[in-house]
Structures are given as C-alpha cells and as structure tokens.
Length: 84
Image 1 (spheres, rainbow, N blue to C red):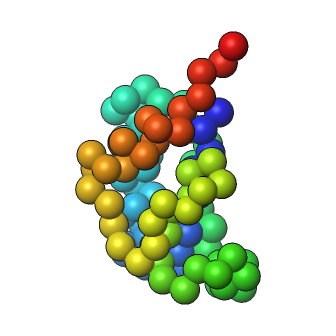
Image 2: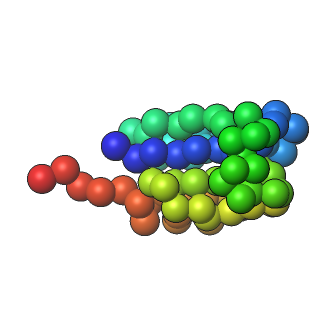
Image 3: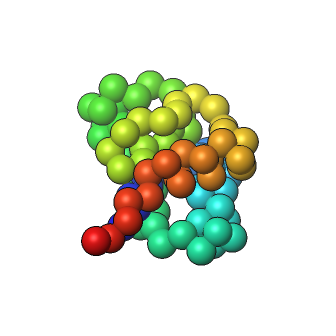
C-alpha cells in the first residue's frame, strides 16, 4: 500500500496539503495510508526545517511549499507498486 506522510505543525498550508492528498487519492481511486506528522521535535529530527513537507513511501518529495495537483498525482502514481 502507498504510504504518504504530510509533515507540518498544523498551519493552513499543511492542512491544505493533507486535504489535497486525500482528494487526489479519492478522485483517482488510489488506496493510500495518509498520515499527518505534527510533532515539532520529530520533524526537526528528520532534518525538515520548512513545512509543509511530503514523504511518499519513505522518500522526501517536498518541503516548504505546496505542489500543484497534477504534480502530486504524478508523484503518487510513480510510487504505486503493483501487487504480484
């Protein structure tokens, strides 16, 4: 299953990124585990100093800005692995 982590303390842009992830997955019928990480100490320990940040399947894709919807969909589709 696709694993998506939205990282940020809960600012409006962080919430917008989280909602965008849910919307893109729902609109494209993509099964994903979307989690929100808000603990500042945990975020800092990962070396992330700008939020929102986005991790898909343990790879950092974004920090400090919002992606376009089409870019987000592209990243998500690139990380979908087919079950054998």
